[in-house]
Length: 217
Image: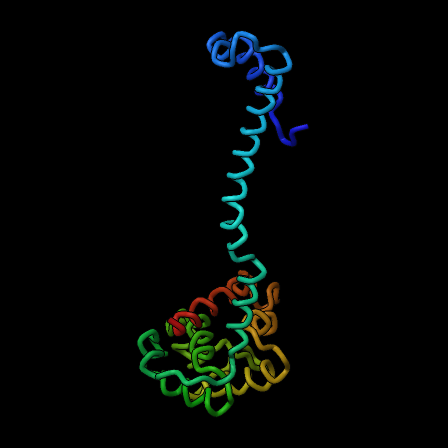
């Protein structure tokens, strides 16, 4: 039995060979039914072997492709590096705009003080403020969406807001085992929160990730 054979094709092939007088003459005038069957069987076996060879040639390519599990594992391991790492203020400042412009050194200082990656602090501030253009940033110097008893906190300066964000993230997130952007987002900007009627929290993790990895390039 030929696994995966198209028997309609095989039947047509048999009929074609049977009717082909030229093939009969090439195989000899004394060709009997047993020889004819053997010839047809050989043709089918050759066709099957050629098909199997194509599968074998493609298999290594497929097997060498990275699996979704391996891709996800690499992504998670990159996200785990949220404790302090040296980042140049100039690299941060190249991306920071609006109320965040020129704050690269402050993000670095906050990261050193609270043992948190300055790139993460900058990425969260960029996402929360539309890169320094939100009303909260402009009016209240609040660049991290930090909440108080009466709603959004008001800060005397953007520097104060950055330091408060770093303290909060280090103490209440990283120290509690929330060591990936995804885990932080689940608490920092929970989907379905009552203070998020327009569903902006749905994009928090992807937005922060996008800004964070800009600093990795």
